[in-house]
Picture 1 (spheres, rainbow, N blue to C red):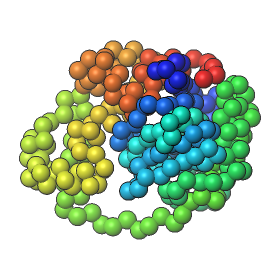
Picture 2: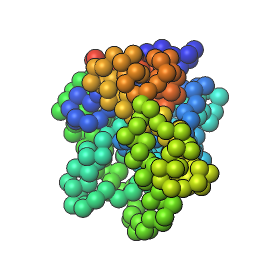
Picture 3: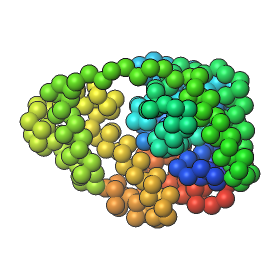
Picture 4: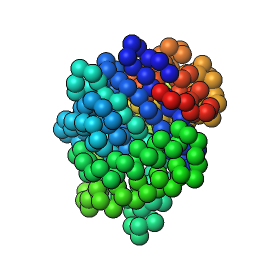
Length: 279
């Protein structure tokens, strides 16, 4: 799918592993704002450099490098060189990665390194798996995808730190988050939200951003984009998705969706519902 001059991007679904979507893209001017995914993100840079702000620091990933972004972790993305970057991305759902971890005898999925991964063997496996999905080769694609996940889990994860007990502000943020999820199409204002969790508005705003990396209004739009991906993937027309999720209109959906995913809703839907083609 052609985007702006010199930019191309395409989404599709894995032909052999349910719960995995893929992206192949070249971006030059497109900038991903702070956003999250409810899946894992395994990104392999083929040419150029991408810079992402992730877990408190800017990470530069150059050709041959990989980065793994954990679900629900806030991150960004922009070109690190004038020619932009070309990359291949796999978005496996949490259950897919958890199954791969169980194959290795892991009780839970440990966190992946937050740094650029320079591992030629992992890069070759990820690239081969991605290319096999383009060809519709279910057996090769599924085998190579699982091999790539196994290698990355075995070599590029670290021990998960103990989780601290939530403070009073953290409990208020969790209650606010739950309320936002129940009222996604018509979220309350900050004052109403703060009153509902018995916390001053500014204190809630500060705590919410500290815990989730986004203020409440940006968090709502981020969750809406997650839901939009699922609805579009199920065949719901973009106009109905926009109305059902509380976007002002379809252009409003398109603006937020493209900023976070790199493609418009219609192009995403055609990609995941149709046969992949080369980008």
